Length: 283
Image (tube, rainbow, N blue to C red; front, side, top):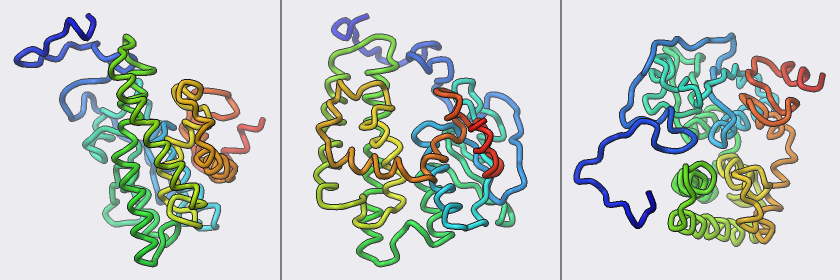
């Protein structure tokens, strides 16, 4: 049915299977659909995730902390396959009632402490270990400005542009135009800001960069939605400079691979339980 023929009903009714690529896991209610306990490894942090942009935020942060030599940040990363509905298992719902990845449990706390939503996870780890979050009030506030910018902006890129451009069952002109315009405006916001700043919060790399890069960095590097040409991402020269600099960081390169189940085999580390796991990808 075309958009011109559609009139919203007086009362909306859910039609299972309606919704494009992820229709088989979408539903209008929360809660668990099946019983499934989560595995628990030996490290303080237990991460349950998938290497979507939101999942990459958490693994990059943990790998960056380990890169600094902070052994207390060791973690096990368990795969949550959202295409199979793993996020609706009872164990996962218990640590994130919103059924979205990533979710983290800190077993160094008694009782173990759940942390969900990617922004909350990165802020929690930054405060716990005292890294990647400025201590000066002005610098911290600028960092948090961009943290919250990302939390509000990225749904326009993912659930908006990404859904209608890449995943919707039919290409619809109005939503694609609407969200394309917004994503290009967001890229221009970033480009203008990064023309005057090395990183999002100034000269220092922070959690703001780690939160924004998996979405907008991946976009300008041509890794998201196969939309680089469509969006003319090469015109955002400062965003691309910033994205390439972050992409070169060893911890970022490792973090991108964790809980990844697609692409080149050398880029896929389905689960991560020690630093030695990365060496297996080279064989």
